[in-house]
Image (tube, rainbow, N blue to C red; front, side, top):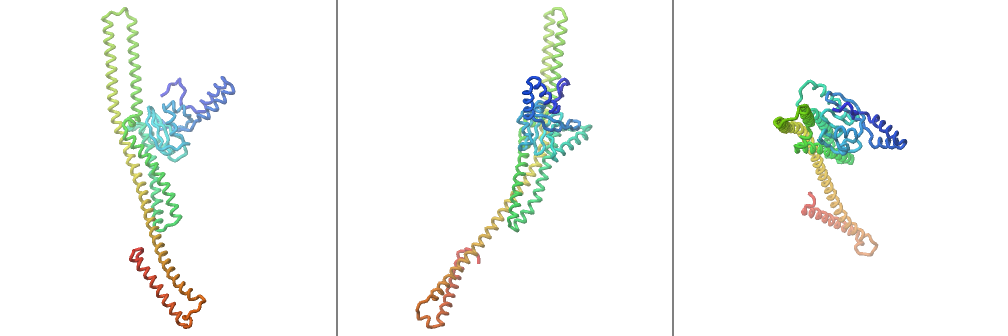
Amino acid sequence: MYDSQQPSPFLPASASSSSTGRTNLDVNGSHGSSFSSTKKRSQGSRSWIKIDQNGTSEILQLDKATIMKHCSLPARDLRLLDPLFIYPSTILGREKAIVVSLEQIRCIITADEVILMNSVDGCVVQYNLEFCKRLQTNKDQADDLPFEFRALELALELTCMSLDAQVKELEMEIYPVLDELATSISTLNLERVRRLKGHLLALTQKVQKVHDEIEHLMDDDSDMAEMYLTEKKLRSEAYTSSDVCSQANYSGGNRVASKSAPVSPVGSAKGSQKLQRAFSSIVSSSKYGSLMSSSSSGENIDQLEMLLEAYFVFTDNNLSKLLSLKEYIDDTEDFINIKLGNIQNQLIQFELLLTSATFVATIFAVVTGVFGMNFAASIFDHANVFYWVLIITGFTCGFMYLSFLLYFKHKKVFPL
């Protein structure tokens, strides 16, 4: 893949930076060493896992410049793989690589190798072990999928499995809490539902982003064709070999012609005809190759589309489960609001009855208070008269309270 005279791009960053530091030190002295240390800090290397086609993995220390040069990627694509920043799930097809950022799995897939962001996360470790196992197991078996699609398939599979496990765990946790909240409304249950609702919204955004990214790839044939790296690599190698052969034939014909005597017009005409035939054969072969590549790319697009469709259905199913959970939470909230409204109406009814009773009792208290004042009246000359006043006042207050109840029933303020 690389010339033997050029240094390997997968050298440890410490070696390359140390050589740069020596060069700067020889030229500029101490100022060069400070510049090299600043460059080290700005272009710090990270730990990556390289997996080749034979299923062999190794841990390397690579900086951004080395990866950008090796995979022909712009700097903005590498920002998607930076663990210090949180980016939504993204799958980008480039000229020589596929940039995959799916939850914890962040890698660069080429036609020959996978450069995986090294991490102690379970998904990354599982991806490394599982992909090496699949490559070593299917080494002697014919596989329809090329290397880059197998790597992409495993990344999608692990991501979808991780999201599905989170969805199932949330379902098992949220349904009992909602049922308990429907029967017993308390501050503790409301706090648990609020926390679970936040987790539901975050998980829905993750699944929705993976779902939209797969759908975007399926809708754009050019993006899917761009992701077929093996075909582009073979086409480039075939074009390079044909170009070398044509240059060799052309230079050989010139050498034979230069050794001969002065060429006659007839000979020159024959030579020009041979060159025209050679040129036409090269053009026809290139046209045939382009047609074959376009037809094969169409088949590969269908193949990749079928691969993406399976995981699109899987993520769509998880998204439907999350939407069902959200609807169940909304229904529970509506039920709780109705229940709280009913309780509030009962409290208002009780307050209305209590207010009416207070009004009636106030009237009775006013009458007794008036007769309890110190003033001269003939009614006080008879002891039994005051008792009759109290009895008549009590019956009057009771009649008024009953009238209030009949009035409330007639107006349907509350059922009685």
